[in-house]
Length: 405
Length: 148
Image (cartoon, rainbow over all chains, first blue to last red; front, side, top):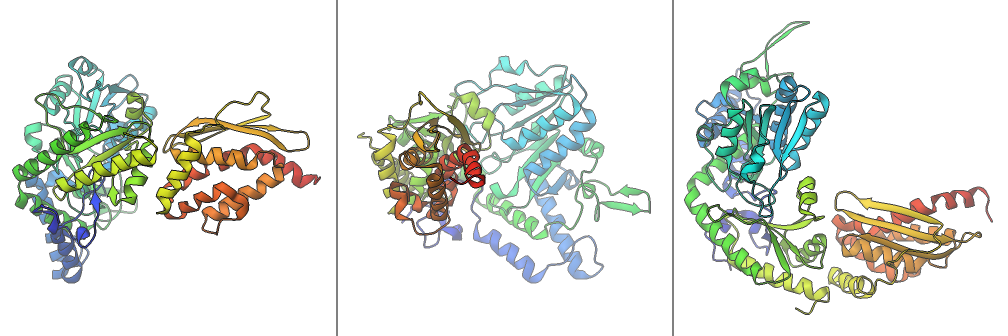
């Protein structure tokens, strides 16, 4: 039915007419990832880092192999620079609570773009409240970009700059290198949230020269429950653990504990080995597809979707790529005269799943002067035929609302 | 298709007519309700007589079609009723939302029985009713203590 070489890899689409346009929230999972996790539980399940028997050693090997696979995937150099956590949000919280609280003082500043997801906003806002530091926003222009003039807000008072490489509302890349260079020039630490970017573009943390970067397995074809933190070695070594307990210790006496080396010291308790096995398989899936093929397929879909939407005079698309910039496969839009929640509910009756709401970016919605928007986010399993269905469904929604377009 | 039917009825009968969307000159109660997560925002205004009858009711606000139409239908339904009759309708509405068959007394509001199939939107349909509850709670309490 669909002219798509990738769709068959994803069992959720078997025998269903599901049109899934919410990959920015979470991607669907290829069969290979699901199989890898099942196989782990069927043949290799044990508690890693503990048992002196071979099954536990195998679980440990699989877990650490995932760390190596991810380190090499983002060019981290040393696998010890990768910490497995529950999600990108937890990684950002670790940074805000552990690093932020230890360096911030009154009159210091944390700088983030207004377009940030709540996960990269609320933790900073809260640590600023606790420490008396100020949270300073870089405001986006009407196209969704950040102008050079805004970057002047990164000053000697700035201690931390944290931003998403690709935003989850505009689908545009921020000038990461420029922001990181500016942050380092004033002596600030640069943190990059790669949750949206890594499923669409290669991430090279060494080339970026960021101090920390955070990732989310479930947005890159992997399972939920796994988030990744990358840090420069000297930065991770400075970071106090947030959670303590088993598996993160070296020696424990009645009154004192010494912690394990990085990265174990951040991984308290039994870890999600099956999740890491799934992530390892997801990395293999992305490597097998290759970023050039992903970029080509998603790029064509995105252009096609934008072109089709531009024909509808009652659709307004938010954000616009600069002439040289890339539009990632994420399009946020509004339908004139109809609340986004009503649009999404009616699209759902036609089997089309889109996101509607504030996309976990309420301050940005206020900055844009809208309550909510609709968002279509695409992945390799989407097809032009599905975009045609979306457009037909949008026309129908307008008719239901009594518009004679 | 129940959901599309809901929209056709809701949209045609209310969002276009807007007859209940206004301020009251002699409001005795004004109550504000919001759904913070989706931005639905409603202010109900009620004129309540000394014998606890809802002489008139209106609303202003913004939000999705379901939240706004539900508030408008609610206004039609409770206008002219005593506060205790409004309480009865309130209870019937929530019983329907929770899956019971719509009571005939709910009239046009019975269209929201479709909410059983759209759990994500229930808070939109009940916003007006929750706001009514806040507005009338003092009267309900008073009636309970000194039945007329």
